[in-house]
Length: 97
Image (spheres, rainbow, N blue to C red):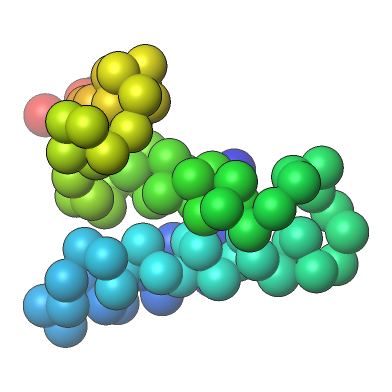
């Protein structure tokens, strides 16, 4: 689960009209900090970036899935799933509607 301040920073970037990659950068920064602090069991920075992009998609940042040929089919499928999960309304929003 991303930290509250990370989500707030990403939302601020979104309000300012910045690109989705900039918004996702907040999540990447958080993951890299966790690696440096020793909170994670990731082996390398690439793995931390992949985790951060997944968290960003689930938080509602519209980072597109990787292009065909750039990543495994399973990775692309999971990215699509994360993106859909991020677009769904939460339980509180469903009640209000």
